[in-house]
Each structure stands twice: as structure tokens, then as C-alpha cells.
Length: 402
Image (cartoon, rainbow, N blue to C red; front, side):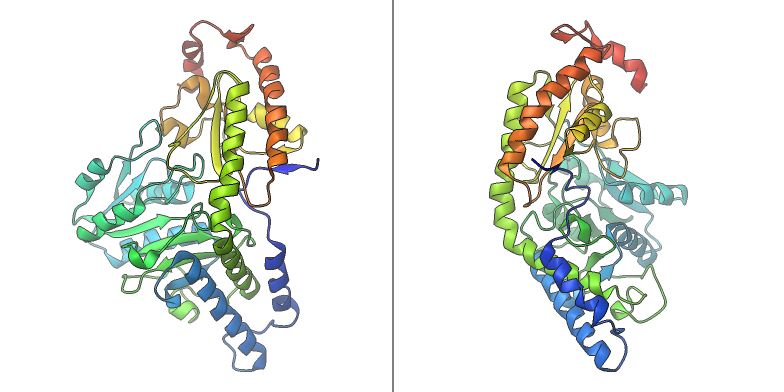
């Protein structure tokens, strides 16, 4: 069997159909869409069509609500900084403790600039407390920014309800939907969500292209100023080929939504079943009843996640330990810490994330390989002796995480 890729929450393979529609925009339709000649006309039409394809996937009311950006990070930064610039008298932001670094690091920066950042905690299943959220909403809050689904555990947050509550309190609402778009059905025109971020490379489009959805009537200040592109809301000559590619990827994602929530989900569930039945002292993290269909995060107690990944890689299997944007750290991920995952397990969490390109045969291969990897590492662990953990292993772990 060829190598197995189960790290689709980090990035995805670009669909062949996406590549096919992009190629002409490098070689034939290469004009600047702002120009007034035939080399530009076809490009402008391609961008218009792509905007409509994105609109169809997320269910927004107007294609003018789609702003093309370079990535999800740019979309997130634009949303946050626009909200505070448009409302200079409001000095508070509400977010969560389990957001992607693209949100948390901007909030950390703003906190140093004098803003009050309310970071909502989660419970052991990664869920938010809506009653606590309601108490934070006030006329002093410039923005609520909450991810639609967590990138590590797949836990889905009630962003539609949270947006309704924010709107009633006169507060803007943004959601980082990078992991959710293309996996969950959306109809934004029926919500009170003001801004939403998309990243192309998470749904089989190329890297370097993203979207910020901006609901009509939402107060807005651009991050990039210069030319008139994107109706003056995001300056810079359009990345035409990638925009067209993203449009095609959104069209395909809409076609595959049901497949994601049936076939892909079945592969995820089979992997969990096989691993948890064959390997003792492991468990699935997050909200098991309300999560993305493609994502599982499994904690293997008493061993290190990085060591598991190395042996998986040797076996031709790609997975990850937490977010790819933070996995270079030796500390447990901020998501695991926020969920209060025990010390004995927090370092041994592995995220397997599927796509429509995976197969059940690949799942069975991973199930076959994992028990041997875990057994090998536990034999080397100072917290494992014979067939089980040493006495009071959590006490032994505590100094490591202090």
C-alpha cells in the first residue's frame, strides 16, 4: 500500500479538477482583471464565477459579500482589526481558550495595546458554557470571535446561536470557519454572523488563497489599502488562478458534503473503534456527539505524541499532534490544556483527519499498525511497567508540565 495521508486538517491535496481550471489562468487568461481589454475580460468573468461558487457553498445572500484574501490568517486578522477600528470606543473582545493561533496571537497583541480580552474556557469535552457567554456580552464589546469547529478535536461550537445573542446585544460576530467550510452545510443568509474566514488549502484548493465573508451592512475597515480591488476592501492585484481554483474547490465541496458526513465519517468511526478496542489506556478527546465528520483526536496515555508520529511516519502514515501551526512545541497543545486532559495523556494525543481521498483499506492498515507502535513506546516509557502504568504515574508526570 502507498503512503497514507491522515493530516487533512493541516492541509489537503489539491483536487485534479481544481488544477485543470487553474492552468489556463497562467498561460492564456493571464490579463489583469482591472484592465480594459480582451485579455482582462475572461479573467474578470472567471473571478465573478468563482465568487458565485463560494457564495453557493456558504449560503450567503450576495456574491458581493465575498472578499478574496491570501489565507485564513489574513481573513482572521482583517476581521478582528476591522471590528476594533470601526468601533474605536469599544475596548473588549470575546473569544475562547481553544482558538487557532491566528486568532489568539492577534488577541494577545491587542491585550498589550490595552484591550480587554475575555477568553472563555471549555469543559473536558471542549464545550462552551453559553450562560457564561451571555454574561460577557455588553455594549463595551467590539467583537466576538469564535471558531465554528476546533481544528484539533473537531468539536463544533454553537456559533449560529452565539451570533444571534451577540446581534441582540449590538455586538459584531466573527467565526473562523476554516475547518468547517466544506464539511458542514451552511446557510449564512439565515444567520446573524457578520464575518467568516475560509482557507482554500483546507478544502482541496491551493495554498495562498482565502476568503473573508462580510455580511452586507457590517461596518468595515480594510487591512490592506491601495488599489480598488475587491470593491476597495482588500487592495492588491487578484490572485486570479488561485481564486478560480478556490471557486472550483467550493463547487466540489458542495457536491461532496453528504459524502463527508457519511462515508468519511464512517472511516473516522471505524478508526476510533479499532484503535480503542485494541489498545488499552487510550481515549478520544472532544465532544463525541457534536464534531466534524472527518476528525478524531486520540490520547494515548504514558507516551509522547512526537514519538508516535515518528513511528507512524516510518510506517508511511501521516498524522499530527495537535495543530500543525503549533506542533513544533514540546508542550501539550493549548487545546488539551484548556480541556484539562490529564498529564498522562496530554502529551500523547494524535489527530487523524480524513478527506474524500482516503479509503477504508487505509483505515484498516492504520488499525493494524498502531498497537505495535504504542506497545513499543510504552516499553521505553518510564511511566509504564510490564502490562500497565507505574504506581501514581500522574504524580511522576507533574514536574514535566509544571
